[in-house]
Length: 207
Image: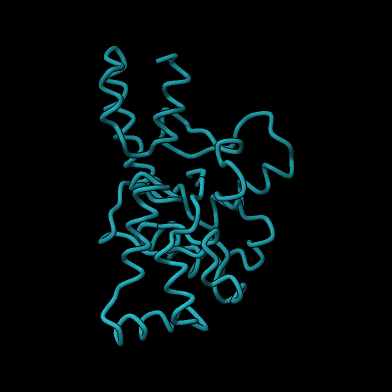
């Protein structure tokens, strides 16, 4: 799970909001169609390039503007006033078994009050909570963190389903390839997927 360092809100987004004054996220679609523009695609591209290095904000798989959606960290239904707050917008993958879509469907059903303890990656650094099991590829809680942090971390993993079977399998395969290159640290720059896991492995092996 990435720590998202938000840049200043881009001018094109500010200008769009000032000009059209959308009342909710659903109105964006109508405004785009009527004016032959695609502000959502432009916004995704900006955030992926400038803030997320083309990684999903939650699972860290590589994504692009065609394989992603704009994610509201605080859901539109619970926090309608923040539907276009730039600090509440990130980019997530399109998976239905984890990440943003999962959170807004199954996640909120399993954890109806999740937003009270969910780790907001714009406000907090998830690396303070999580590390990885380098044998299995699972996202795990760090040793020695406080009880409330453990609760928050466990809930966040559950809400986003970050240890979903295929995701863990993908991490494990990636770790295998990384371990095969451990004696050639110069090759690590080519491993751009799962960046916090790569960083954790490098720290563990002093690469």
